[in-house]
Image (cartoon, rainbow, N blue to C red; front, side):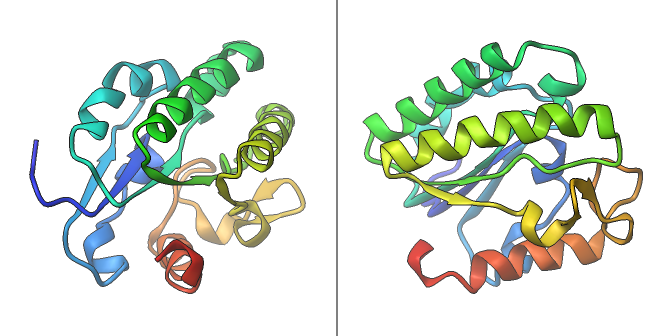
Amino acid sequence: MKKNIHIVMLGDSITAGADWNKLLSKEHILNLGIGGDTTFGILNRIDSVVELSPRIVFFMAGINDLCSSIPIKNVFENYKRILETLKSKNTNVVVQSTLFTEMTTVNKKVKEFNLLVKNYCEREKLSYMDLNLIMSEGEVLKESYSTDGLHLNFIAYHVWANEIKNNPSFW
């Protein structure tokens, strides 16, 4: 793994789809988004993230689990273990909501899952950024932000990056 990493973007294909160094106008960012990854997969590689000793980890995951009908309870347990590992190493974490899709049946699970995660973050005093407030209309990903009803386009990544850049509490 690389050294001198200040920021890790951790997640699945939604995270993987961007050049975060350019979008955030910063150096020393490592994109550890992997297409198709699940919370179980991230949990299995979380030690390699911790070894980097990043200043901050921006974390989003769960959509692949929820689309694969993995029970929400199991997804949430994996998610908590990931966050507990990061927190135990004094890593500053910003949890980002799992994004809605254009699939309403999946979005019901996303809504329930995000509520569990948000409540957990409040209890554990972790930063939580609800990207659905700006990326969705109602409980559906904005069509103008998506390439296929699930993945993001160029415009959406800029909106997301601006949300990060404009929040001084993260820096």
